[in-house]
Length: 266
Ligand SMILES: Nc1ncnc2c1ncn2[C@@H]1O[C@H](COP(=O)(O)OP(=O)(O)O)[C@@H](O)[C@H]1O
Ligand SMILES: [Mg+2]
Image 1 (cartoon, rainbow, N blue to C red):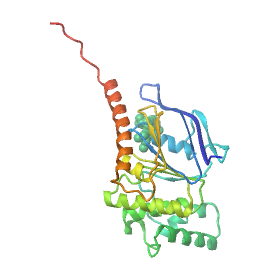
Image 2: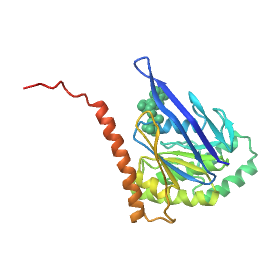
Image 3: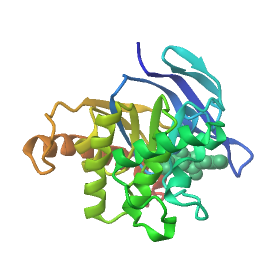
Image 4: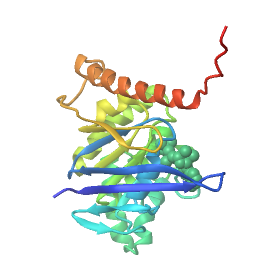
């Protein structure tokens, strides 16, 4: 049975012309337990909308989300979400941030402490528990957010361009850290990225989305043994295949937005 099944999702938003803009166009896919699924697509194509629907933060117009084969409704709370922008509470320490979800669930203090200790070790944040978000680096903040999501044992973790605001070195380090933490926790992850290299380095499988409205236009099982070497021929070959598809999508979008002037006969 699949950990996550996304079935036939469609979504439209109201637009400025009192009409609707279709954002998701019958999206269906599955994610297996423990799988790392990468999702890439052009900017503004509907990636965040898709993740919000999976996480139960937004209702689709049509379609279903199934977790372990059971349909879930919006507001289900079974998916951890790592947002594009840093989202730690500035008035809480690292440990208090990590324990937030447990507090909301009413977990007693002793158990909260045990669980947060364990996840703090896993993500490698020992010694920083009492620091406030402004006292840790951007990379450490991302690890704290990952810990905050994982400590409540979500069925699935979704991440929305989680490393896009970081420098290249920190990004590479965090990619390796996320994979290490996923390995230790057995988490199932759907990871949206506009960075194709990142998707190839991390993913077991990659979905490529079209321009708005998003459809799945390609799917690759990334059959490269781990640990992967970013600059290997295998990685570069997946990269160029995906970039080719995205560049064709971009050309289509440019053609649509370019209105040729009336030709003048001479
Ligand atoms: N709440 C909203 N209301 C209206 N339009 C929205 C809303 N959220 C996103 N959009 C539009 O829907 C499209 C897809 O947005 P989004 O899912 O954020 O794309 P991505 O994450 O791929 O950049 C964009 O054109 C965006 O402007
Ligand atoms: Mg987005």
